[in-house]
Image (cartoon, rainbow, N blue to C red; front, side):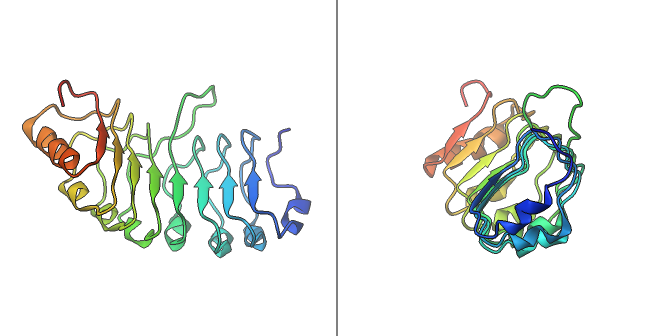
Length: 199
């Protein structure tokens, strides 16, 4: 089934806990998406979304949000008002045309996502991570596969709950600084997956 807009009857399902609208051709969400107060999981992967309505922040119980493989040229500001999110996917994967837009920068607002445990920005064209990501106290897993990141920020070693860092396919410089940081993370028990030889 394909549709560009959410059918109106869906907004009447206020007790719905999990809504999956994947690869449907969706181009926007209604402003009153916040009526779905029972949602804890919202899967919108492989659509054509370019933005999110402010009303999505009214989903107070939402914990899992999948926006992977959409057409987001920037991270929607409303996401940073959703401190209850536990899992957020903004990553890309193999796609057929039309190709999605890539993120090239990330706003320095991630310190508002205090509940986030898993963040996926894989295969986006980001070359740097904002310092505010170092202030996410509950981050357990960070997927940076296929990004254009060349330098690992030192604040990664200060994330108290980090347990997995995925770096395969990233554009990391093969130098002593990156290797030292990876060694320090592994010394803390973090699983780091990288293409750097012998790292």
